[in-house]
Image (cartoon, rainbow, N blue to C red):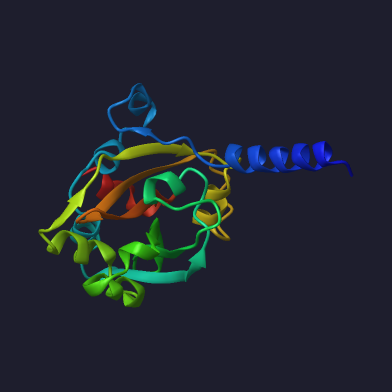
Length: 203
């Protein structure tokens, strides 16, 4: 294959990956009008989602660790966490559970430069909630909230749902950067289709 053909193939592969990522928009954008009414206060909330879920689910709330390991961030995550194309970050996937039911899928991207000093503990959270750590530290600063409508065309949709084949056309998520000084980490929270939580989330 000639060089131009190789470059074309690589470009097509790159564009395919980018198309498979959700489009994240500022929370104040016009897209918020499409958010289901029951989810709107949760997606636009700037306080701790962990605390709100704990209040909603009470003693049944828990965190289930799904994955923890080093991988390349997604294309639209790399500029946010300051990662170059070939750089790896620590990526943590969890379900925020009410009893045996997953309500929220959370993805945390932690670049290597953030894991210094006291922040090394981020690699050893296990099934402790990250939100409890972030919101208890008054030196941590939170960036703006972005929201996305995540469809079956997006890889993140299938990662979040795992083996769930609910047939739901779209799910919604939010993400924001948190800063330890100038060192960032990115937290994305995807609300899963779970009819059992509906009454609680509408309150």
